Amino acid sequence: MGMGLGAGDRLVVASHNPGKVREIRDLLAPYNIETISAADLALPEPEETGTSFAANAELKALASATASGLPALADDSGLEVEALGGAPGIYSARWAGESKDFAVAMERVERELAEKGARSPQDRRANFICALTLALPDGRCDTFEGKVFGSLVWPPRGMRGFGYDPIFLPDGRDVTFGEMEPDEKHAISHRARAFELFIAACFSCG
Ligand code: IMP
Image (cartoon, rainbow, N blue to C red; front, side):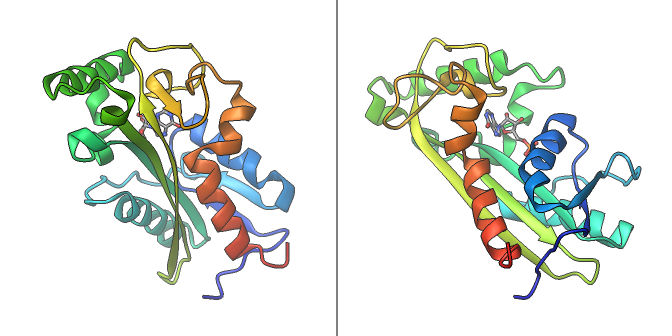
């Protein structure tokens, strides 16, 4: 829909999470796009009131684009567990509580799976999902979604990554995201897949 970006453009990364900003900056480095974070511009952080990943990514991207007058990119992501009807889903960060303790969040997932009697990998299917929205100051926006499928293990394995990584075993692999080298995870992750779609659509002249 004609929302192309090109070398030299400035783009706001609509996140106050330094880890996410760094990851997005790294992914955009080859395209010669100058990135500024929403935190650097002291842009307000909207409340995530949407009922889907895409709605939350759009709301964050639009808030930054309209406040800054620059194109803005936002990401919203989480874990969906099939046997739990897609929970924690958009509440993935919130399941970790005020102290952002993902040991607590992973224990809750495991407790709820145990209550359902979910023991086999087939009963413990899950996916990570990432919605990525590019918004323009005039209100246009475009959203790209990536997913990675696998099953959940218990106990957690590995100290790498973040969030729910230590319990997520991607299909076809025998190490969890928590045990993988970061480059290995980034080659197959939900965020990498959403980025591929975004890059293909918005950097068509490459
Ligand atoms: P957001 O910052 O509102 O998008 O929340 C994302 C939450 O989803 C994070 O706090 C993590 O709990 C979870 N999440 C998203 N992506 C990943 C990942 O790659 N590994 C592990 N957890 C993730």
